[in-house]
Image 1 (cartoon, rainbow over the protein chains, first blue to last red):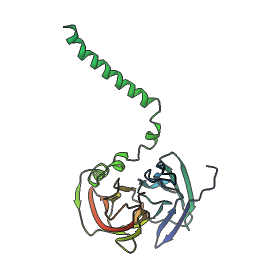
Image 2 (image 1 turned 180 degrees about the vertical axis):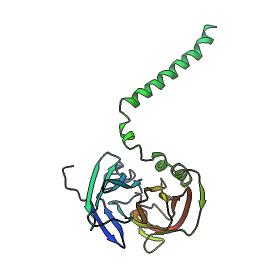
Image 3 (image 1 turned 90 degrees about the vertical axis):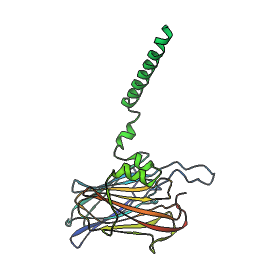
Image 4 (image 1 turned 60 degrees about the vertical axis):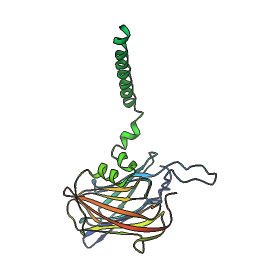
Length: 105
Length: 162
């Protein structure tokens, strides 16, 4: 993807665990809404989000159309230390993909 | 007499052809997108009732509806002005969590999201979901082969599944 990604991620140590917060930039069309010309907007939503910590896959989130626009997720990873690499990859039903990475602070 | 013999034979031939055509289509890569997303449980997400979605996603298991699972929906709890983004939060001290699912009973497709855990992941999990109308919202955790299920009724002012 040539465009700079607007997806945001933060990973922070808190009480020994890693708190990951993730905000993706995606319209999440359900396929039921109509635009101003009363035409249905085709479904376009993120289906699969995977999280890696230092090349180890730790979490898979599967979404249906009921996930909000610009999806937000927050979860914890057991342990972890400063400088751990957290990577998120997502793919939507149209095949669009995204990658967001950060270091644990 | 010949007719009597031939009719079933023709049907058998026809059947064989359609099966092999299907196999060809599958092999030719037309179904590739589905295969790439093979891990997206389409049957569960397209199920139109909570029971079906749960059965497909989590299978048959003993359901323990109890207090080991804390679940918050909406802010303030049980209320949402805008159904297009309702905060949810799942907490639990359960060990060996395999899968977590969130379902909205009155949505066209109840299953909202499903998480596959590894031992490296810990709750709480927070996110935002869409809710069409006043509805029960259900959280289910599968841990150690048991299902833990809890639900909250949420009032929604503006439906969010447009």
